[in-house]
Amino acid sequence: LESRLMAPMSQSPISVGGMATLFLATGVAALRLPTVKTYPGYSQVTNVAVPNGNTSTIKYLGSFDDADSCEKACINMNDERCWSYTYYHDDGSNFTFAAQCFGLTAPRFSPTPENNSFTGVVAWNCRDDSDCSFNGVCSSDGVCECNAAWSGNRCEMLNLLPDERNSGYRGVDDGKNTSSWGGAVLKGEDGLYHMWAAEMTEHCGIGAWAQNSRIIRATSKTPGGAYERDQVVFDVFSHEPEVVQGPNGEYVMFYTAQIRSEHGDCNCCQEGVSKCDGSTGPNDCPSKHTLRDNDPSYMAYALKPEGPWSSPQQLWPEYEGADTNFAPVILPNGTIVAIWRTWESVRGSRCYLAIGENWNDTSTYQQFEVELFPDLGAAGTEDPFLYIDAKGRFHAVFHHMYGTDTLDHWWLLAEGGHAFSEDGINWTYTGVAWGDPLDRKRGNVVTYKDGSTFRFTRRERPHLILDEHGNPTHLITAAQYGTGKIPTEVGDNGDASYTMIQEIAHQ
Image (cartoon, rainbow, N blue to C red; front, side, top):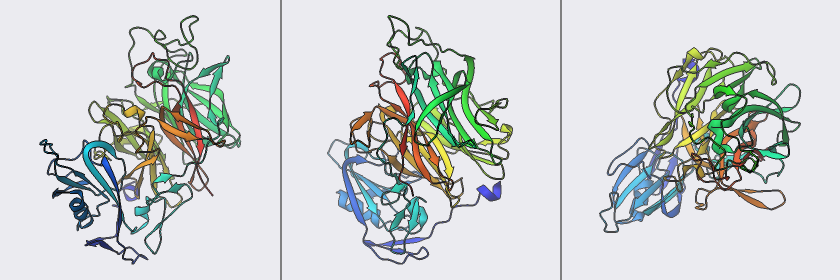
C-alpha cells in the first residue's frame, strides 16, 4: 500500500526571469511571453489570504501602487510558478488588504466578486502533463492538447454537450413527480446500465432529504437514456449512495444511513394540504423534526446489481460529524483510496484523504485529518467522485462551493470542480470544471439539443460514467428545477429535483 500510494509527486523545475519562462520538462524547450487575462472586481484569495503573509498556496508578493506592479511580481516569482494574482486597490478607507498583492501557486480558477480587488490569470506554457490537469498532453511547443472530454488552457473544463431532455432518472408514481438527488451508474453483465440514486418518499423535495431519503436502483439500456426504477435497495433513512467496482467485479456501495422505516417523517402528498409534485410544502413536515444529517456511513457489497447485499459495515464508529460524502476507488490489489469530508460552521465543507488495506474490512480504513484543499475558502467543496484514468492517474470531481456569493448562498453555486493526483495522496485542485464562475445570476444554465435552455437552481452530487478505458462519457448530477433557495429550511415548495445525465464529448 505504501509503495503504491506514498511516492511523492515529481515536477520539472522551472526558472522564471523577466517576462519569459524557460521550460525544462522533457520535450519542451520554448520561450514565450505569457499572456494575462484580467478580471476587475474579482479575487482568487477571498477568505483565505493573510494580511502581509503566506498560506500553503497563496504568497504575499508585497505592497504596490497599482495592479501592473503586482502582475510583474507574480510573473517574476523565482521559487514557484505564479498561476494568478490578486491585487487590492487602496481606496483610502484603511481596508485591511489595501495595496497588497498576492500570488496563487495553485492553478485553480474560482473567482469571488469582492470590492477593490483585481485578478489576473497567467497563461504559461505547459511543462508536463500535470500542467494539463492530466486531462491532456503537453505538446513540444508547450501547449496543452486536451482529451476529447476536456477543454480550456489547462484542460480543466469538462466538455459538456447539449443535453437530452428525457435523460436521467425522473421518478413518477401515480402520475406525480418523485424527486431524486444524484446517482452512481455502472454497466452490469446483463448489458444494462444500473443507477443507484437517493430518492425522497411521499413525493417530497430535496429539502426533506434528512427526513425522507431512501436508496433505489434504476436501469436503462443506454448510459444517457431514461432510467426506470427497478427496486428499493434501502429504506428511509439512507442517502448519497456511491457504488464502485471491486477487484473481482463486486458492486461495493458506500452510503449514509440510519434505517427507520419505509416512510419518511414528512408527507408531501396530503389531500388539501400538499402540492404532491415532488416539492416540500409549509405544512408537509412535523413542526418539530430533527435534521439528522450526521448519520453514520456504511459499506455493503453485492455480486449482482440487484443484490442481495452483504451486512453493512460501519465506517469509523467513533467518528462524530456531518455525513462524510465518502467517495473511493478500489485498486486491483484490494486497497482503497478515498476522499471524505466534514462540515465546519464557518468554513463549510472540508475534504480529507482516507486509505484502507482491504476494501472489505472497514476497520482497516484510516482517516487523515490534513486538509487536501486548505486554500479553498468557505464553503469549500463537497460531493467528491473519484476515478482513475487510462494512464493510472487519479481524478476527482466535486460540487464546487467557493466563488460567487459564497458567503451567503453556497448552495446556489451550481458549479463543478476538478482535482487530480499522480499518486492518490497529493492532490491539486484545478478550480471550476463546469458552470460559469463569473455568472452572478444564481444557478446553472443547461443547453438542450433543441437549442432551448433552462437555469437550474441547484446542481450537485456529481458522478461520471466512464468507458472501458476510464474516459468520462457522461456527467450525472442532482438538478433542482424548483425555485427554492434555502436547503436547510423546508416548506417553500421550491425544492423539486431529478437526477440529470448530460453527455460529455468523447471519442
